[in-house]
Amino acid sequence: MVKLSVVVPFFNVQTYAPDTFTSLRANAREDFEFLLVDDCSSDGTPELLERAAREIPGAVLLRHARNEGLATARNTGLDAARGEYVAFLDGDDWLAPGYYGRLVAAAEELGCDFLRTDHVSVTGRERGVRRVPVPRRGEVLRPRDAILPAHRTTSVDYPYAWAGIYHRRLLDRGLLHFTPGLRTAEDRPWIWRLHREAETFAAVGEIGVFYRRGVATSLTQIGDVRQLDFIRAFDQVIEETARDRDADRLLPKAVRTYCAVISHHVGSIGKFEPAVARQVRAMSAGALRRMPQDVLDEALTSMGGDRATLLRRLRRRRPAPPPAPAPAPAPAGPGSPSPKPHPEPEVAA
Image 1 (cartoon, helix red, strand yellow):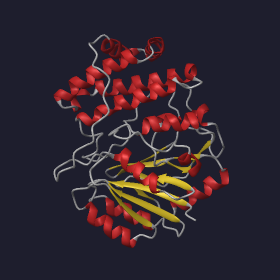
Image 2 (cartoon, helix red, strand yellow):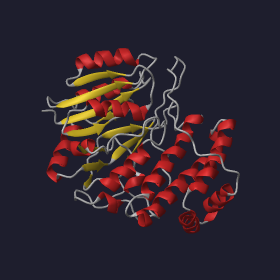
Image 3 (cartoon, helix red, strand yellow):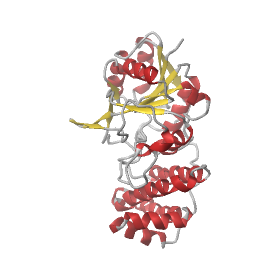
């Protein structure tokens, strides 16, 4: 029986993939499988993956006929997963030796639906530990309770899918798949749904994922139209949370977080291409108009300061219509940047 399935998407990461493969070998076990998903890479990544599939115990190579993005690539891996537990890793990040074995042991000891873990953030030669914003460690908790309070950074503000391990019962319930087509912020609707609908979770201090930030080809570094998917991702969070039985309690947190991310993007508007910058402003104005206005007013009052002023001014702009689902992307050419759509930048709620 397969104990753990690890879903690892790859797209044009030939520079970093060797580190990923080395760390997977150092985590291999006879009851682990590594689902390597090639999202139609156009550099040397496919050749590296073919070799890895031969050399890494438990490796299974899956291929996309066209580039479909991280969310869909993760779904491809999930559809093939056979393990009792599921974990994620990005194709340009890496692991400490034996990390997954320790994580499985912790999950079995606690017996909850999912675990969340700390991680190491890597920017060039600088490294720093990022902690799960859950103060009670090694204790089984209700995920719904970890969404609040609205005015503080909480567990849903730590959306990294690869920072944890998930029991198969969540996959069988449809809680682990990602919204297809989202090219950035794909983890946001996912982490909110997980916290609303799973029954138990725990945070542990097991550190073993090394998350590579500041990659020049990351979508968090590229100011093109793909960045606009944060609007669609957070619209989904608001829509689904509004249908929740605890909507009155949870919506203030969802709205405040959405406002904080809008403020972040509009406040750094210079990173976008000019046409995209105009879209960011117009679509953000539309997003503010779509939010529950009484909840939005309360959020702006509690935020105060320059951010609230910026958002009130933005709300008065002529809004753009809500974003349509992204069309299927065209196959990537040799010069296409790698869409490493790591989660939205960390912003204070």
